[in-house]
Length: 363
Image (tube, rainbow, N blue to C red; front, side):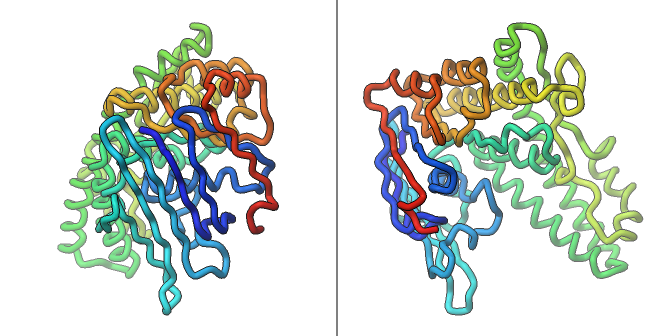
């Protein structure tokens, strides 16, 4: 897949912006605050149906502006795809977000997920191991919904039931029959989410382990594990926690509390790995995500790299660049050129460099 053009209007700090991308290597160069990351966020928003930086769409619209629009054109060897989004404030002050695929409105965001597959690598991803379980769950789910778009529907189904149950528990002693019905639904939808997460993580582990061996020069082995927040069967765990959930008025059991664990030589990497080792783990994970998605699609996803080169040493920079498919499109942001970045650009005579400064966009 190749992104040919993106158009932004009143999105974040871009009043109006049009970028025409090269087929393979693209660099967005500029100081912090110039809006580089916002370009990648816009691409992510159109390819995933939501931002990776915020859950509130209103944060994407320029301050005191009534709307924002995004339009992205992409192509593969056989298809041409146009994705559009319009975020508009109503007269009542609420924001409505609508998407179009090839000019036709879509009913749900899930319908655009995977149409333009992307793999994102942000500086915040390097802190994946030190972040919260929610950070790791979201990283896994973002990856999985592109590999299997039905996972988006599974997550939505689970979230709906969980919200209903949370509202029921919040108001004191609940209706027992209604609670049992919701618990049945929660167990069913939750088990589907967990099963597909586990299966996907196993697939990623095989490739990630190989990539980490290369990065560590065969000194350490990487393994991944899906860590349930409860023991035993989900439905039984829900029953066992029933009294406590009623007492606390919270949903305590389910995949919304699970985690992903990373191990080096069977030791918990979140506790024992150095900063350099943790960055190698995240890099191996991202390379595995990229490779696995490419195998599924038969085409390379678009790789979005947000200033990560500055956070990686030369060994890891080289490892990242060397594992990129020559046919892959890469959009990279950076504040300054490194030797590895210059080499990356020189390998493609058609590479494009976009110079962006803070005075080109409104503050």
